[in-house]
Length: 125
Length: 125
Length: 125
Length: 125
Image (cartoon, rainbow over all chains, first blue to last red; front, side):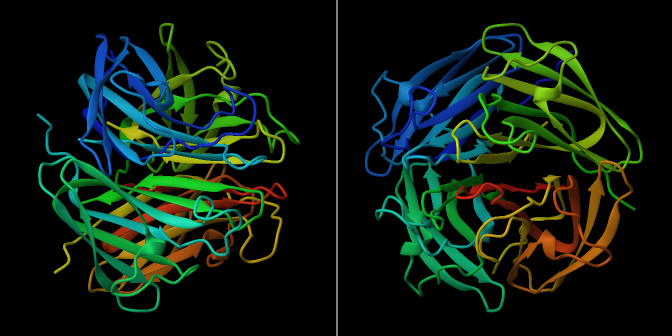
């Protein structure tokens, strides 16, 4: 029996998809990634809103995460309602009908021969 | 309807703006950055105090963050009441009249050809 | 007298053991690592379940951590009930009968001459 | 008026001082660092216990942090009651009589020409 783990709202303030990238794709693409774990027995229809410095929030983006599954999604790949422009500062807020846990990961290959890697949990509410 | 997310006080103990930097500016400058997300419908007049190892705190620095907006601010760019000296250890405490979420990000280009990247959420109170 | 510190359930959503690796082994192997601190006076029989994007969770893996001890375990080294495939996205959920603290660390040496390092606390419940 | 911020007990499970190091010292030494912010009006006599995989905890180490001050201390520099051996896995537990905030930072220069940087808040109790 798995306890309910996590929270229904998560926030990442520090988004910015690195651009340009160097190295073979897709393994050395630059990306921002959200990693979601859903330990419950129900599918989580996660919705994501993207916040900007100079425009109203855009969303919701829909990210289904199956029961007892994870999902690692590159923000670069979100296109509906609109793509997130590369190299533009943003933040995001996720909401889920069931408790999930969210981690943020950046891979930065803007500098040839170098690998910038950074991660943090999102902030739960 | 967005719930109130975040907290009104946030702390980052581990500041130190990397110096010197290598590579084109501003994209490969060395910096410490605060990333703030304000999901509320009110502008947040965030105030920041900077703590040092060997001197009284300096502040407040004023960082307005619009309603439903993010702001990514490099500590290097704060000059009023005074600039934060490069390569000097510091910490900071942020206060906001409305709940916000704060993330810390460092880009370190002191070593030519290398890219040091590190991030963490700030500590909420 | 040490207070009870930590929690009994911890989650890391963003696993993916980097592959391939470059440099001498084992110091420059690519790995995901869980770092567990048990400050209590009882051994902690930590159990770990691994979640995937496209399959049911696998577990439990057993990780004993002695009283007043730490343990740093590379996910690469877990083989019972089955090895975690390299370069495959996963997440994990740890449960302990006594409070512990869990940190996640990745070392990424996929790019020759570069060193990607990222860490975060796991999420406690 | 600054509110009491932080906690009195903090834990970092994932310590390991990188060795060897490459590059000029002390700026490119490999190190694990604890960054402590004390926003209170009282000096904090922080005490630190170090946990190992195969030995009883060692401590307390004494780290005074002045009122309204930060302190960034490299674990490499702690020598009383004994030095922390390089490249040996450890964890640590900090206790403070007044609330403080603690962040962990690693700089890894084991690979010439590369810079591994990772940070996370410690876990508060």
